[in-house]
Amino acid sequence: MKKYTPKRASVVGEYALKTGSRINCAALGSASCGVFCTGDDGKNVSVWTTESQMPVKVLGPHNSEISSVVFSQDERFVFAGTTGGSIHMWDLETQRISVSFREHRNACNSLAVPLAPTMSTLVSGSQDTNVKMWDLRSGKSYCTFKDHDGVINSVCFAPSGQWIASGDETGMVKVWEPSSTKLIADLKYEESPVMSVAFNPVFCTLASSNASKTVRYWDLEKFTLVLPFITCLLYTSPSPRDRQKSRMPSSACKKKKKKK
Image 1 (cartoon, rainbow, N blue to C red):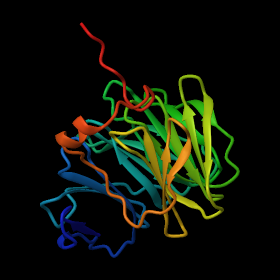
Image 2 (spheres, rainbow, N blue to C red; image 1 turned 90 degrees about the horizontal axis):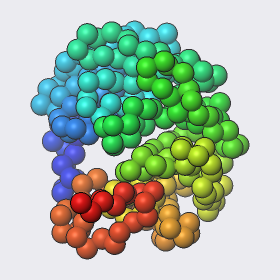
Image 3 (cartoon, rainbow, N blue to C red; image 1 turned 90 degrees about the vertical axis):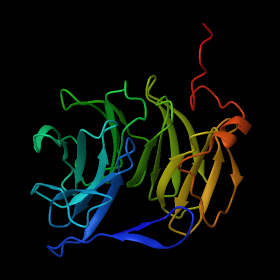
Image 4 (cartoon, helix red, strand yellow; image 1 turned 180 degrees about the vertical axis):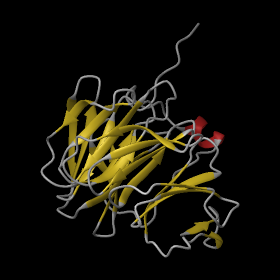
């Protein structure tokens, strides 16, 4: 696994497991951006710092390979999805499993947590074609979206947490409203499998990448395609200048502040 600088295509860090296991997935901690975790085919989750070439913690082994990982908003926990379908919530201080989620019937391909620290939930996408939202205390799902016809490859939350998006093997992207459990939109341009989805943190738009080596850019106010083809899209940390220039998105993408 390699770490790149954002402004130039050069490697500034390279990380490899000494066990020889293949790394299947990785996730960066959004709170500090100084820690990341990986999941491997050796059934372990490894936690790294960007300054260390060796894992600082190894969590496992699990009963099956790790297929998806994500940090909690405060980086106190790591969620690990497995090829067996189970998801485990690891406490990084005690290095023990706090809660396990076991309702998926097949591999858990993608995990996401909301950006809002007040929202205590998790969303998962699975090869069983279901998208689930979980109660972190009980380990039970409280919402299941079943409208996909293909394997789920990616899920993500909108910046406000009011919407989630999911992409599947048939080329379909779906946008959901968890509070009402309603399907908001079906977005599809081609049959090529959707590999990942990501909301824009400033504008009310969504990017989806396909196995056909393309990125689609969707307007979520009109639910139309803005750009049919983008060779490269990196939008992780908008500058204050960009934020000032941006128009106010719909409430689903960003909440308006109430005047006192």
